[in-house]
Length: 424
Image (cartoon, rainbow, N blue to C red; front, top):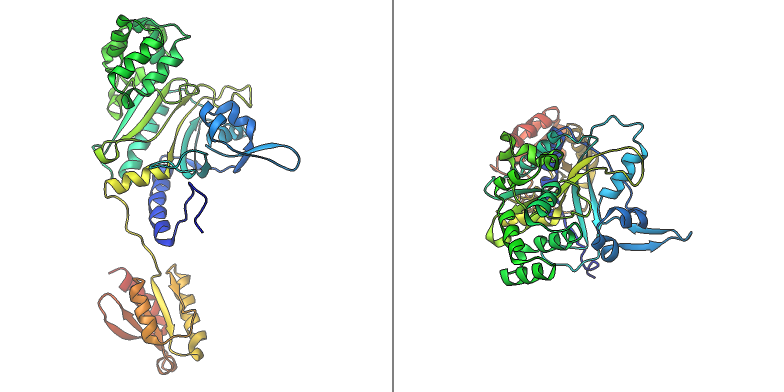
């Protein structure tokens, strides 16, 4: 039987690849001072209706009612949960915080390349600071994460926009009303997926005249000189505007076409895109919240962060031939030559495991030749053969499957001998 549509089974070779990738991500994130947290898979439906976008809340929630009549949902994202947690424990926490998680999320959407119904996502957030240093740290972290899995800056592009800049440009350069902005931003969000005629028709439908359409085109080129036309008071709270005036601007490309999730990001917004023509798509993104926990507390707690899903990232690594080779199997197989030698073999295995080596014992009674062939198939490096005569002499046989060298080794030297082979 296949798994539920949009979910996946992971066999050991796939899990080995995932483990290698995610372990590297954990390493990099923790180098930047982030601490791991977790939260429940089930949350009240109301927090997603209040904190998530309408598409998630109205169309993608997996919801249920428990026996007490409470409406619950499988989490579609981590942001509302962490907002609740930060608010709940705000009196105990030492802000600013650097937190990260790696959780599975569920969304009811049509499965396709890059999208499934259950995915695993690494979330990295900074809470409690409105400083532009947070943006610099987050952008630095993104580049370090990508470098950690072998990607170069030519393989991807970090595109950054700012809602404060975008709204100011709409008001003062394009000349549209506050009421028209959501519709216009929706058109911009689809800009790269539609042709020019469709875009113009949509903009006319939104009430823009020819001059406004031309001015909008100027804004969307990303020319930084456009910001010279914006009032200083509008840019005062824009961290992107501050970063564009210093050397930190080399961390990203300013791009007015990035409009994602403007319904809840309040200023900085960004996406990471694959530059390969075979996979030219968004990999992950994030942004800044003026008050992340506002639904749950009266305290003002700003936040900025991103969520990196496993599906798009593994597709990216596959596209760029960066997936690690699965590291399966054990370091050592300890094979007793007979049932009578099982206890002796187990004592050898214990000594190897005690120093951190992955050592396995046969679980079926099979011939030595069969176990040797299995060890070769499983890419084990060393086989320790526990024979009756050798054991009586205080020794075992150690075989290096790489060089095919074999020698009799004293029992108290087995650990050292195997370590030497594994480190060659």
